[in-house]
Length: 132
Image (cartoon, rainbow, N blue to C red):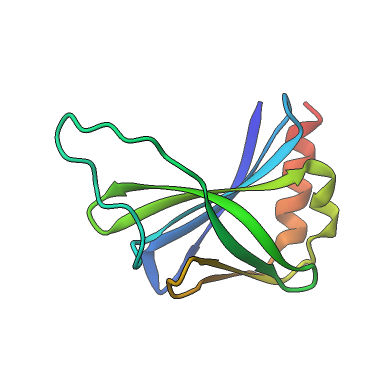
């Protein structure tokens, strides 16, 4: 089973971030749907296929720290890109503070930043969901 919480930028509906946990693998993942930035892939042409290769990025989470991660990105429509970021084992859920800011910087592009204001409620939901 996969459980997730999603939050969006109230000032920009194009920007949504999702934290998901999977009970079959016990892994967490951050998925970001955001406006395309310099270096993001262009949308696929008709009948085009492409091999997606992870890119190095920097992920900073207030209260936890920052570090290098691998991001797999792909275009989802004109002007938007989906980014998948593995976050490690589900035990890391307890490390997230109640209020935090995530900043993801991929290559030389401008950083993507989003604030989460009630992660205590999100964490409780994710744990209940995983216990099913």
